[in-house]
Length: 426
Image (cartoon, rainbow, N blue to C red; front, top):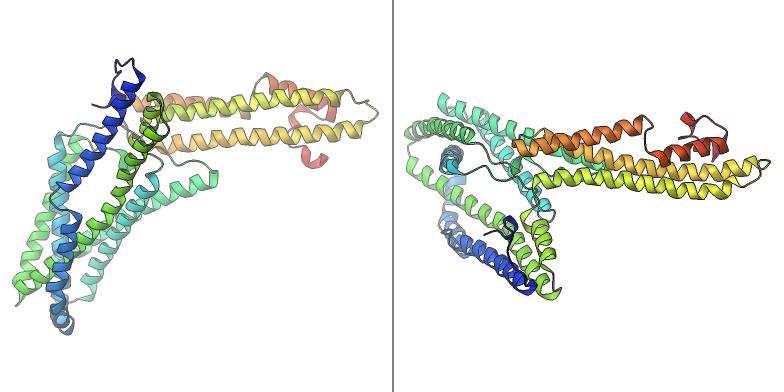
């Protein structure tokens, strides 16, 4: 049972720390056991790779020396992989049909780089696979029309899907970089498809898989050595699958390491139950999207409070300047210009936080989400717009308005032109 989802009636802090430690240890053990009992361990996968290489390497000279054999193996491998992708994804969609809509949570920051790398690698692999299919359809003549159509259509879909995903992901990263803002807490990979989406996607995948199966059978019937070509293609796909599984399992090791680090922190740093819970949510579970959205709004509130405090501090620094005799106007204006410059810096910092928060919320708004999260998003966006309207309308608090009024007198300029006057006074 997730300790975060309940309010444990534990009065002894030591007992609660023990409860958390056992819970985290069992979670880690459960994940490790799941990997070990999934049917294939890493050592078995390595054995599969070695066995395929041992059996397949002697056939490489024969495949390379015969253009017909090489082409048949290539086309068969593409069609067979198309078949496995469609039937596999269709099966997963229908098997997970009863899966409930998961509570939306942000991905922990320490996992985000690995997740983004995996997504980019997956998109790049799909784009490469799609390109290979289109190239095969145009480079090799004499294939049945059904095979050419399957290769072109499926390859084009993979290229289009990969291109869209890469463009969207790159756009978000670039926009965040330009704004010096954090990446949005919600991405398309956070979401669990709705049941109706799973049904439609599952049957669509099976339908496309049926067309690919027909094309594969039709193609193999026209080959003289179809058994040899199918066997070689199966070995190629098995080798690629084993290597890919080993590669992506390396990323999963990051999760296991995070559990172990938290266990060590509990023991070495003697964390309190509240600290353990905070680190568990931050480092392993991921904060609820509703909490992250509220946190974004709180960041803006803190930025506004910091700006208001900066205005009050600058007011105090104006007092000695105001005591300077008016006949030393140049001195008064020079000292005031320095205060004005610092005010501009504080205002830009506050606006940067607001712009970054607005960017994150705007990106989240483009992704479908449940009603509860959507309501929190609307409320936070309304708070963002209020803060922006206040800044653009000059309604930035009493301390700011009073500071501007006093500096206007010292500088001898209109209040509306006070901000931005430092360039003429520096």
